[in-house]
Length: 505
Image (cartoon, rainbow, N blue to C red; front, top):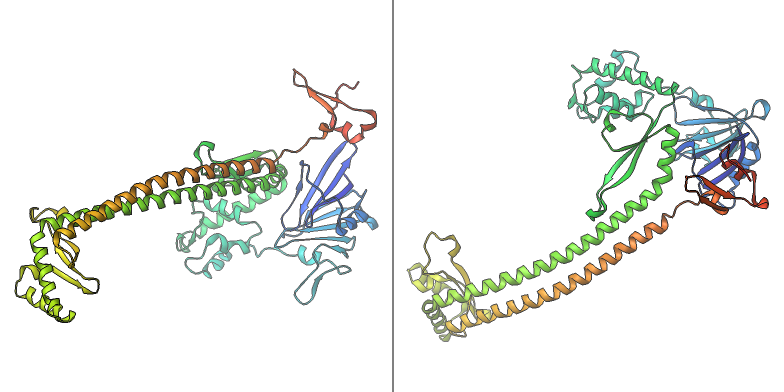
């Protein structure tokens, strides 16, 4: 197929339009990420970049002759043209990636990302691309079980087995994990945990040989494509969970075969669909996060109001109990008030009064034993009061410390606590009313925000307009398409979209 034109989607993603008579294809590559055929109509920059113009200058009308992986690295060599007119586009798919246009001798004509590697290797115009050095790269290999044991003997307990094997084989971690699970090892087996150096070496060696065989099979056969999905729970249950794309695979690995997935006829189709929808799914995930955030905020408001109400209820109940205890112990409380008042009337210091109370309690004075603290700076004492009519085994009637105002009588202290209880009850009622209004308002705002988020998502995910929609068209009752082309608006490319055998009038 020959190059018809070249476009850039952004500063690292490019489209090469290819055709051969009536057949058309589009090759898409993104520096450091992907290279595949695409069936989707991607947005193009209105003005081509300087790198795109360079590609057009040298590649337009050239035939795509070869597509080769360079060595075992993630580098692809696209050869356009033959002989003296040959050019190469090197697409690096690792790290930050790169795209380099070279002549037939691999002298760089244009470099997307000029850089320097070490002291002696430069990726720049007029430098030679190190194709031989990359081609000669091979994995250390695992030719024998002794070699495998030697590698594993250098590992410490707790090291991840899959990660440790990766530098020594020419395939990736997905295939390693597949054969590990297939051989009965845990997916995340570690040295000493899931893998024994003394017992499992033979089984592991067989598993790695199976990986090499499967790799050769995948290299020489057209593989299907699988898009592995992940379930994202929505904040609102009525919409159900959202399935998002997690990865694309050329083979149904053991560790993902039970995951939700989409099966496609080719790996190209799987990669193409994955990247065509990934931005849309990012928007879906953003919507889910916004929904969760809004509902969490609403839930926090509800919990805050509930906590305030519980606090006021507990305060009212506490004041009621204290008032009741004072009433049940009114004589003792009154005697304690009078005793402290008399000591203060004698102008004794607060320390002396405290010592007198402690001494009296030690001597068995009933009233002094109930005084558990002096707060004379606020004109109060603290007494430990209990229900004199309760059973000794009743846990609900435990003694309670009550602050007593010595400036008023015992009955007046009880009335004071009852007043505090009524105040807390009124506050509780007002808080409940305010909470209902505030929650309704917050709920209304949240629902409005969720509607706005959903609307924004719908707008941003507007569907792609098909080629025939610029003409008059309709679908007949028997499911056939009818298109009306004006002579002046009948370009060849639109004619070719119509299926062969269609009736033209």
